[in-house]
Image 1 (tube, rainbow, N blue to C red):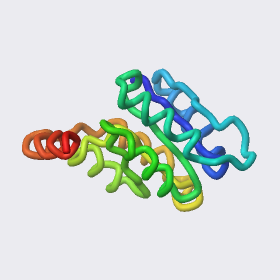
Image 2: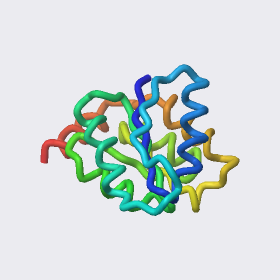
Image 3: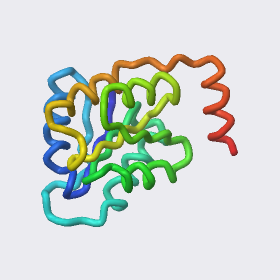
Image 4: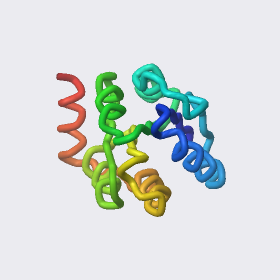
Length: 143
């Protein structure tokens, strides 16, 4: 799978851990920054991932920050993006299964490191169940 990833300074450590994991699983990963833990304005780093996923250049995107809230808000401003903020396995599973989320937002300050990669793996591997959910997701995207 082709995956774009970015973070602000507060998600920088987890971003590196996720990139290493994704590469070990055979995914193609594009690191869109930031490239250090120096303080940055997060929308500048998050929006390129959302735009790349919406354009179809990447199948999925992952964005990270301190809480993940601001990153999810920025990503969801891009038409065609369904960004979900996840904090445990269940939220990651439901985000894919019911919402066909194509961008994952994570908060480094709120997600325990021991849960991080399991959340990413669950989100990547859970299939969208389609059906009535698919019709509603597509209708909302058109509004």
